[in-house]
Length: 587
Image (cartoon, rainbow, N blue to C red; front, top):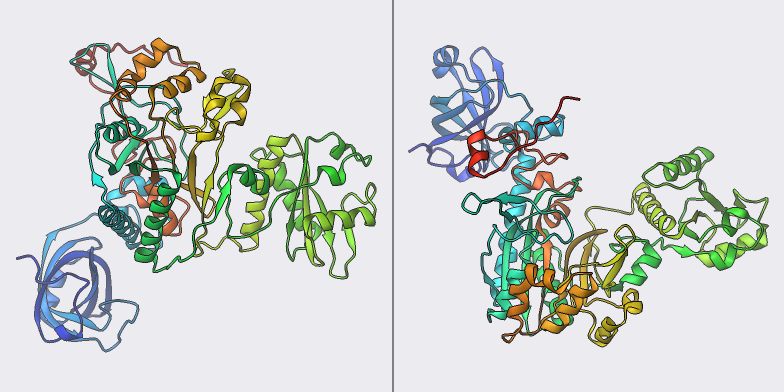
């Protein structure tokens, strides 16, 4: 038997007991010539070991090193200098003997909680990085979130059903990862971006409530909260309307918050239409932990002889509470911030609402104090506040002000990661116009139903921009953590949707004939939602990056630097797959 206890379970009640532990050497502290302390670590915690006179000879002949795997035997005793920050901090083990099970080279990265190593180095040696407490705690949180989601869905009558990973490519939306088939030459599978059609087919099959915590794959550009393979809590329900979905999964979120964070969210989650989100926050996933809403200023400031405003499609402002004392240096920093290529504005206009009630702006030549009072009234500014204004093309300016709002929230400490503000965003547009492709595309996906009262507008191309989708997103602290919709379940409406997206009858039959056929055999009304499991875990863990909540993540180039994947394959494998590579000429 390698151990009688783990390194995290010994307490004062074990004092005097003979125990055997096994784990990794984290730290060795040599106190004197005949006394050393060793911290032994396993998944469950740390235990302090005492190496005294009785092991001096062995310790000199068989020295221990960091990350050695050892087995130890000894007696538990009370520590004289207790450590309240360690679960096992009241005790230590006086060793009778130890066995080196495996040595270790000096680790190329730090195994301590606060690592200064680069992300690339940590991912190259991920099997070592995973030993760190910080990562272990993240993965424990991920496990607990998954377990609580499963527990809740089980109580609500959902069945966990697996769906295939090798499916048909239907290039709508993000790019597919494709897999060549050896048994079917020159034909390819795709890895699923979502189990969307399968879960709808399960509803047609009468399974009523389905869920799956499932891997999905998208071949798209990466960032801190996006990976080529990601995990969803994927759910579907039959005989439901939007209200049923929102109530069911709001309750699931409340259950997770209660069990994982100890937060009892009694109030209903607020709801906001897509149009209001865009008008007041500049994006469809508002961070509502703080106010600072966007205020459209066109009627107040245009046609006053200031060319910047007069030529702009949109003039928009925010009111930064308590910031009237910002220095010229701070205001110049903000101006430089909005001029960055990522934001793309040409400048920033401000009005200081001084504590004495006076108003001082960067455009005093064009607007007198009476006019600035109108600005203050429009934005709700009070003495001590700072009004920030952007002007330009509507889409870019609204997006830029949305980013500036978030930046000000960050600078003012209003985006506390320990505060959680969930929100439902509803009434999304069904379509959006893709200028580059000169056609309408589905904003959500082509299986989303229009609002019931607007289905008749599907017959009028000129109304496509006005049709609302029976779709909804759940947003947490400015991040979309889930999205779904009520689905189309009648063949004729689904065919209209495909036609609206520019798909011919032949193309629709080729890509989705199985689904259209299924709708002819008694498909029930149904709808669902999918939660971004990695994102949800990272938010609950107080991090913006999902990588530290995934055991083996990819880097920003989609590479696994530990495995060195993707990589070339042997010629005989290519031959079996009937693939001929084009030789790249050296640059």
